[in-house]
Length: 480
Image 1 (cartoon, rainbow, N blue to C red):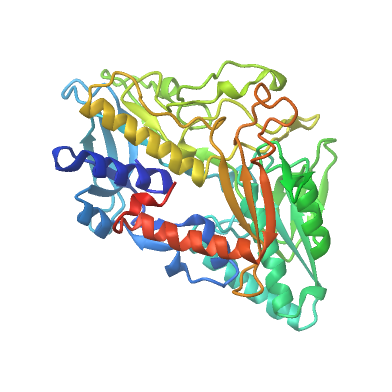
Image 2: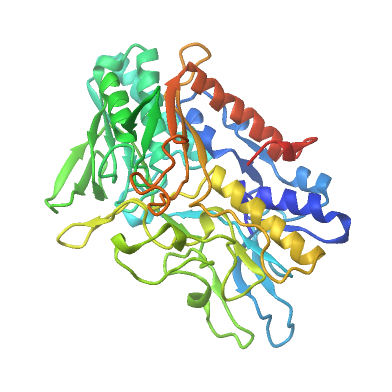
């Protein structure tokens, strides 16, 4: 279920390993695959939306993968009174079959549905019914570019305007996308010669810059050790970007963000243009047993994300451990079900959560995107292959985020000669204070550098992953 980074990766690996003897079925409401990291460039009108998407159906036909353009609505892991097979109920979204439903049986199920974009969490948030733009999807990014173009024209006419980029709720994740977008917006305004007329504000639920929902990091930079927050702060200071930290947006009007910080005092921030990311929820499903009873809470957390082999026991923030995080991503309720990428429920926050006296949460949620999504999907696929081909009773491959390193290239502006990006490596993703008592991470492997080389690395990654996800010859050589 799902055909994003995790779902598409898993499907390609499964078919490559299992061949013609077994059926691989993909169910996704979207007809196209999207390389989400490059939506940033679409959102500043420096890359066409057509360059970040491609149709899934032709690739699946070529690979002999069965594709249903549909959204899954119900999981029946025990079947029902008429059919004991595990199955899912789907509703088709393709133009030819829109609204029709079907049941699809499965022997193994991977939930790789990604996030539901929860714009409704903050009144007035979002491009559809609210007052802010987004870069979460290609169409959102195109709309953001159009709005930015209009703002740039006003700036060229001499108006003094405020642009706000950041997070639209106290529990948002993926702050890195907002970080990239604000730097790209600033870069574009300089390129158009209107930077001096713009007040640019980075508005975030992070208590410190560079937190990114992973508790920040200490990095090695040319022999010195500095915090990620110090590096981010330097970038913002050089570019004249103001910050509002530890903020939870509570309501958004046509030109104002109402928000609170930890003290709970009501505050407001005017804007003329604003790109604010939404919080994520799990894609909603019903899970029913053979008698039709609702057992959703057995399989999914209240957040809508699927429970896997993690330690979900309630505990204080200071008592969590890196070992609480999952290794195999197998459902404890149903051994033939797995979750990959954003779809699995994290056991706890990585960044320390805060709340106002009135109980408004200001707590960056853990990211599970990009490289971790691909690595998890590959491990899950390989475990299923071994369970099918070798009769393994338990998963044979693991991808624990407290062991995985993550490489990330955050664009600070695009351009063949004037572009730049921050190339970062974080090892491991989940800090492990048992193994690395001082910082939680391997300080010799956690690095960051900024420059034109970083921009070209990001551009090369775009090309490499578009090649990989098209399933071109030797696609599997490109690492997740």
